[in-house]
Amino acid sequence: MKIDAEDVVQNAWVKIFKNLNSFSENNSFEGWMRRIVVNTAISLYRKDKKHANQADITEVLATPRDIEASKECDFTREELENAISRMPEGYGMVFKLYVIDGYKHKEISKMLDIEVNTSKSQLSRAKKFLQGVLNSMEQVAKPNK
Image 1 (cartoon, helix red, strand yellow):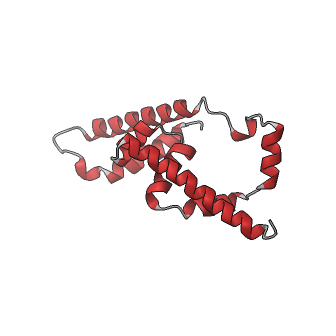
Image 2: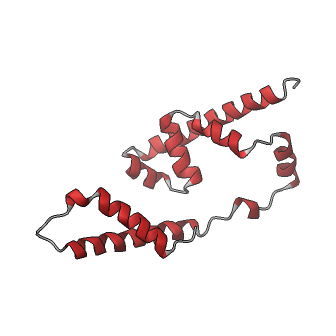
Image 3: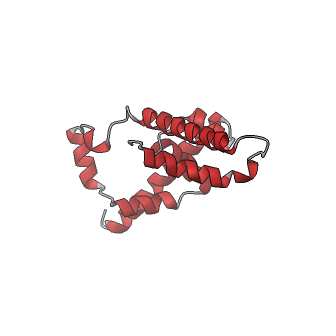
């Protein structure tokens, strides 16, 4: 993810309009907006920095065993998105935040106001659920096996 000024401005405007009712008329409106823009830029920078060390999935080297396994169970993007969308809400939230967005369990626990161990168990259950859904999809696609 590469942040640019347009992303910062767009996200900042959304925050400004959402939080307009929290502005105190005793303060400077310009200063209040500036603080939101700066904090938004810092947040996006930190998020970008956190993801900078993650390799793109196409750059990861696979072993011959991995390549053979991927040929056996080839799911389209739509099928994977469908399987993920079928997860119960708690599983899905933690799964998306951890696997897709790259947050750590401690961060997820703060965002969702849950215990760290709850985040870990929800992720474990989400993986098992997803595996079950994908296995059933594979069985439907290959009924002879």
